[in-house]
Image 1 (tube, helix red, strand yellow):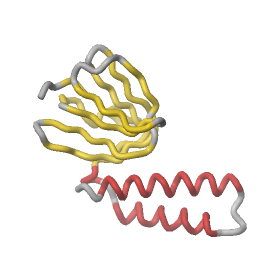
Image 2 (cartoon, one colour; image 1 turned 135 degrees about the vertical axis):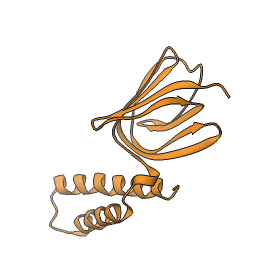
Image 3 (cartoon, helix red, strand yellow; image 1 turned 60 degrees about the horizontal axis):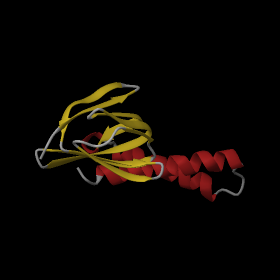
Image 4 (tube, one colour; image 1 turned 90 degrees about the vertical axis):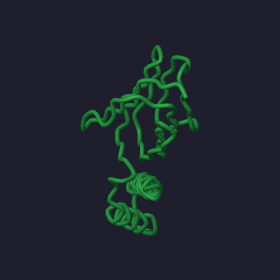
Length: 134
């Protein structure tokens, strides 16, 4: 399969700078699959699983927020959060999920607290889902 250059850059630094056969990411409007020769585009990222395929091997990550761009065959993924499945702390994700559920089950939670808890819960579930691919 034809390769394309791929960079994954987060606020913590460069996490991937190599080639790939395929990239699948969750955008705010659905999943986007990128192969070599993809048209130029820019899309905002949602919360979901990212899949990088190289030499027929799939590597998974939790990918949250940010953007993906394809410019003249080069793909740049700039997520707010990106964690390879083999580096996710599942216990921490479980604890975050439980804290979020506690807030969501509280009758005293404000609207702002509920919105934050919903986002925390979704992030925890995305991280746990990605970790299950390790």
